[in-house]
Length: 203
Image (cartoon, rainbow, N blue to C red; front, top):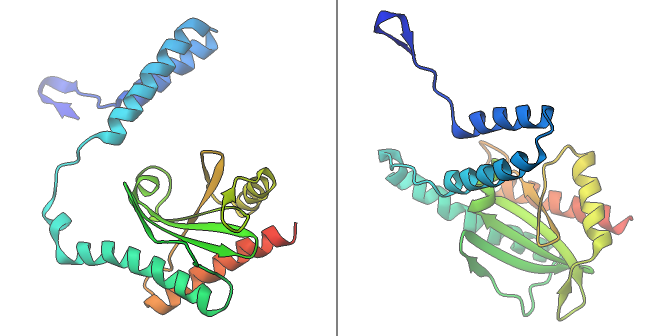
């Protein structure tokens, strides 16, 4: 930004500055300082994640509320679609509100599937509120199966898909088709879930 008298103000984020310092410390092999700097970077990331963004008028538009409600409805409709195809069961599995979203649980074959609306992952990881994860289903309980998680990682890498690991469980993003009716969105996202299941079943 140019000021009077040919003075210039350079605007940088804390992360840009700290990453530049980190690069210099790596080059000079300053291991001790790197450890301290990593803690500071982690602290700045927490501050950024929790920072309050001032409200804008469009944040309170009725259309925004309708979109948020639609995320929950679409999630329910995906589960209903998979049940209608006799692929999924929700017996003894209840829809569950989360701190940052909503989860529907279902058994698909030998897999326990969590279909999530996750605002936290949306804010930090990918441009979608929809996420899915899988565990091994043993009927009345689900367990983390390392083979399943490894296959999900391979699928994500082969598909150039970003994934997030939470508590040893791979979480995959699901992307809704833009400018489409709800039935098309539900059908395509259901097909994506079926595709992932088919990949797991062929391994």
